[in-house]
Image 1 (cartoon, rainbow, N blue to C red):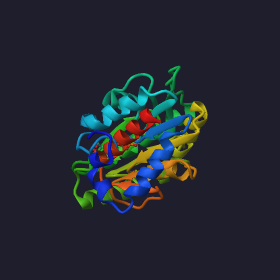
Image 2: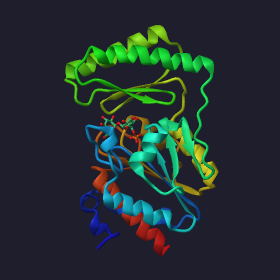
Image 3: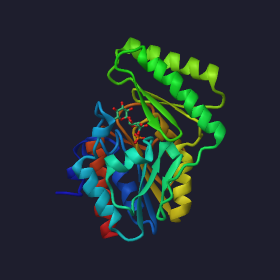
Image 4: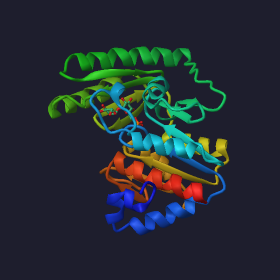
Length: 270
Ligand SMILES: O=P(O)(O)OC[C@H]1O[C@H](O[C@H]2O[C@H](CO)[C@@H](O)[C@H](O)[C@H]2O)[C@H](O)[C@@H](O)[C@@H]1O
């Protein structure tokens, strides 16, 4: 029974299920809908190697169904660098993409060039030196490069090494480089020479698409910036555990896929 409440078991069992379906039904009737989605931990289950992350087939199918509907735009808003997001998401060009937590955009007329100024380029170089030094001294700690900064990954490190990596990276970058944006995520700490948030990115997309309402789903700390800009008639969905200001929560990407499938069905009928 694809697209019905019965296809989303944990939502069916949840106390909030009726409220979720009622709100989703109202949202599905909006004249212009923006469906904006985080990638890792929301569409794609977490994996050890970020390059191997893929959206669940049912999440991808729901995304493509939403994309085909009239007056409906779909966007991915990710902490990943744009090139990495394009690679793992592998979605049609009509999906709007935001990378690096709001630093990079791929809209309908693609222009993903990011021109860093001289100071920023120097900061990126200094950041690289500091973070590569930190990573070199610890097992299973590694650096992912992005256009305006770096992510220091600790997923496979021991708890102790992970703590040391975070502390050293924070204190040494602060001592050497002024004005960095620091973002903590799941088994990762990120440093960027450009400040941007997923909230700013979502507001930009809302204006760009002229959406009358927004659906946003995310799983991590940086997604809270996006939940924070939602209005009462919008829909916020948190995937997994952790503190959140989102109105609704499901357990994992499989259940996110269930909600997206239901939304696609309701909107197709609306
Ligand atoms: O905003 P998102 O789309 O959720 O991206 C956040 C970060 O995702 C990636 O790292 C995370 O997912 C990896 C794959 O599951 C996992 O191995 C890692 O521990 C997580 O932190 C990505 O590598 C980062 O650049 C993104 O910022």
